[in-house]
Length: 100
Image 1 (cartoon, rainbow, N blue to C red):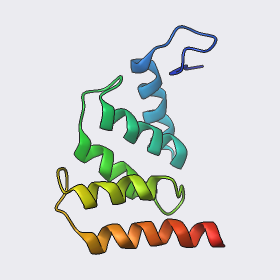
Image 2: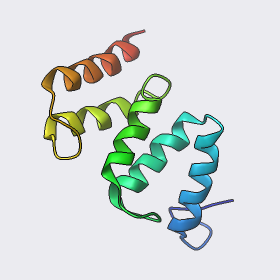
Image 3: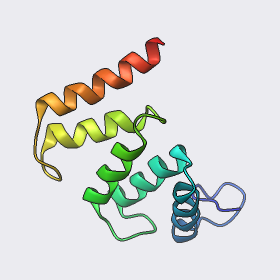
């Protein structure tokens, strides 16, 4: 069992990222989003904001909290080309999902 919070086991960001990656590969949307955060921050993996955005976009439909993270990237335009329309679409998708 991995532990990236250090609650009951020693904190191990590298091991946590490895387990998130394995779970993401088999389709676990939450793990993909968590792995995206790791790439966004550089915790346990080499920092790669573009890969983080790709993971957020990949899992936006099945794990709604990934949508606003991707939308933020389109608002800032520092990792992907800025697009207010794309950001709005992602924010709207997240809001609509919460209404259903």
